[in-house]
Length: 309
Ligand code: G3H
Ligand code: 13P
Ligand code: ZN
Image 1 (cartoon, rainbow, N blue to C red):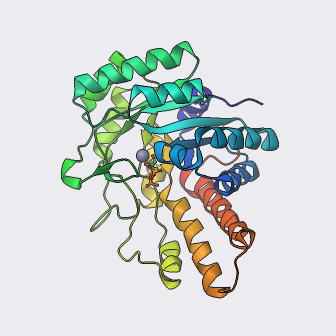
Image 2: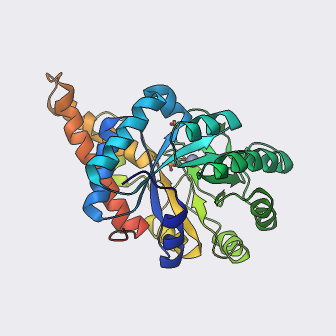
Image 3: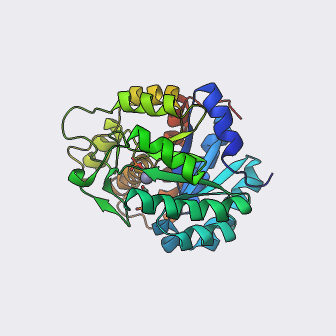
């Protein structure tokens, strides 16, 4: 079974009104934990790699690890570039074997975003690779990008239609109030569902993508804090809101922060309980199991994609 694109996965997700989890990967244990979860749940899967992850682990290592995961699990996995911010990184990932890329031109003015996205789409489609683009800007922090809430802008539905028509992108990431990282809302969580519904009605049969969709489960925040973390005030998107999003054309839900929290809580706990340990396998084994548990929880309770292989 080779790596697959997102095309068929999204078609089925749209029809079935569920979403596929796109999980960020940085090393072997994270990949193994996620893939074990998808295998157990018989769920479709997207593994995504950010520019920061490529810098940390190197493209070739992540590529080979994901190829090993495909061979070992027999699962149809889509390997996706997360937040590619220029043509060169998208080209490098396409040439280097990824089956899907995101060109994130959301920081550029509308016309420039269209031009950049169209260029990537042309290169990718000639090589059988699918393209996600972004319109509107999420707040929050990633390795490469930091967007203040005052600079965040929600996606305009009319612009979304024009953008998709003029670029030919295969899926569109929209901004409706989610944000990257562990501190998503200051007060009550709220997402602009009226906007999402409008966009999905104006773009029928078209897959939308939700970034910044970690739920930041209170028990993991509590566990991190119990074992020395400092995450007071962390808050994610409620699970009920994400489940609702799947009914409005959202076919891909991005999750990174929740994996970081699960892994870090596990490692913190290990060292508090075993201060004398210095064998990486002793703390990475439970950390990998914590990732698997988190991903199975997402597949069942947030994505609704268990058994959809
Ligand atoms: O949205 C971005 C992902 O969480 C990746 O984060 O850029 O720190 O690898 P990163
Ligand atoms: P979270 O920070 O909510 O996990 O979002 C991840 C993401 O959008 C990756 O592109
Ligand atoms: Zn993102």
